[in-house]
Length: 261
Image (tube, rainbow, N blue to C red; front, side, top):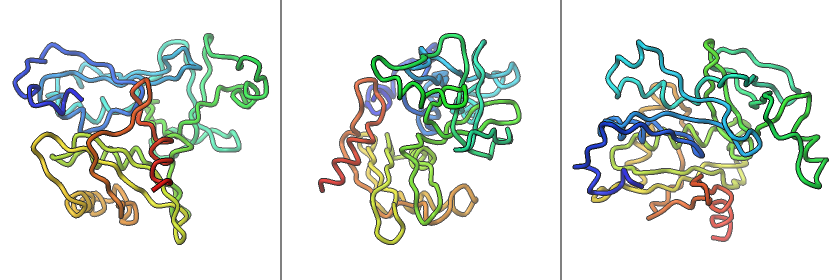
């Protein structure tokens, strides 16, 4: 919201250090902050983890780079904080390789994690399948054990038999120079099962069309970051993107609103 204001262009934020939680830190937002001198970091956790599991970790060599060149590290979900164990597992509970590519559900162990839910012991058993707390987040772990959240399991878009990360698409859309924010959800499709539908807010005084955003995304098809079928056919330009009380994009509400229309 701050980055979308006109007055931010003349503000001095060179001493700001900002920890982003709740929603994934996009490359577009991180780059916008860097241009203003803001050092952004990512924190990851949930209410059941009280709350912190991991944070951005930058080496001394990373910190010597210009802020704009640190973005690829700052937008990752970081390294597990002390006394936290993180693993990525398949639906069967088997660990996947820590190669930065293999995806699965994030599971955690730590001394302070929630054990169950009040008057709902069956949900507690579901939370702790296999002796690990199941977060419901899809992610990969790198060779250096850096965590990168790909999506919520319930928000992954299943199109044509393939999984598509809504967070990846939001991140790529956010890099368009006119875009202030983006949210992507899956909507039912008779042919493909689901298709991505994007909501986009624009920066003050900027304009963009469906073709502009689609053409912007084609460069990432050419570079191999996404497949051509990942480009949304439907993009709504809106004044505001629905958020929850803690600032997360309210994708359940967005899906409900789209279903109504």
